Image (cartoon, rainbow, N blue to C red; front, top):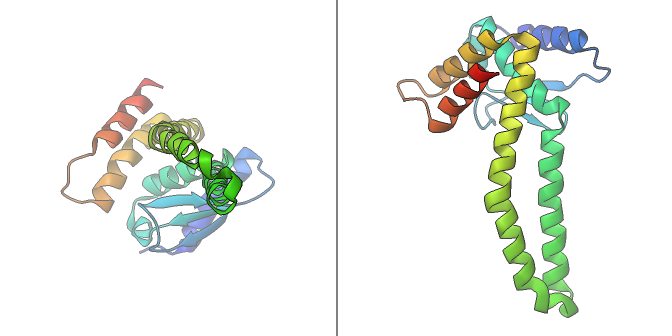
Length: 170
């Protein structure tokens, strides 16, 4: 099993290749919703990624670097923060109670319908970024391989099949 130092070396090479001034932090942790996540300036990688081939590691890091570069986690954080502040204003300040039902209906529509499509756009943009950085073939192999490592024996999800088709058409 490789160490996290090899992942750091791959990530640093990509960041240098892009000429980015600020390097994201890298943390290997089991607290990931999948093989990798980008959260507020930190790329989290699941320990299973350490046993993956280097080409798959490059895909995972390039994909998460795409989320980091486009500040996707900050946008999501600001959306949730505005929901919390709006809820506080409407439920705590008595003069706004009459509008609380309207606010909650609007936000339910935004989060149920809008956030799903926004999340798909984020994934598409991160895969496109990775394809430009490391090549489309590596991205296609990486998408398939990640599913095999994280969920062995299970068929590819509909969302993952859609991502493979999208990358194939880039």
